[in-house]
Image (cartoon, rainbow, N blue to C red; front, side):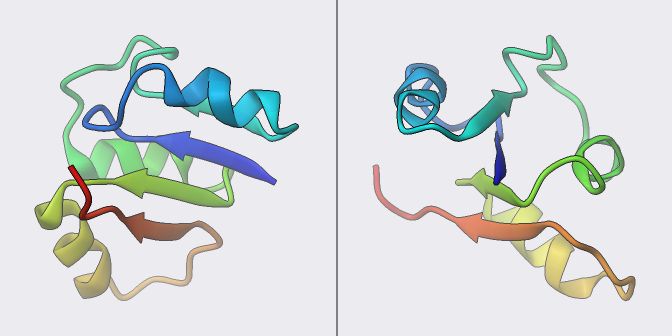
Length: 79
């Protein structure tokens, strides 16, 4: 399983998830901080299984798009 973390997720979470054996990258590790939601989706849609975000706008955008996509969005609401 490949996991991607949006820029609003804690930076140290990448290493924590990797330590559990999952291939994990983030906006920070790829050096694409500030990329818009649509562009981020295009970058990660075929490479990753899960995308974690705290961005409610990204979550709503993902619900509105009418394309089949492999990646699943996980909207995180905790601080």
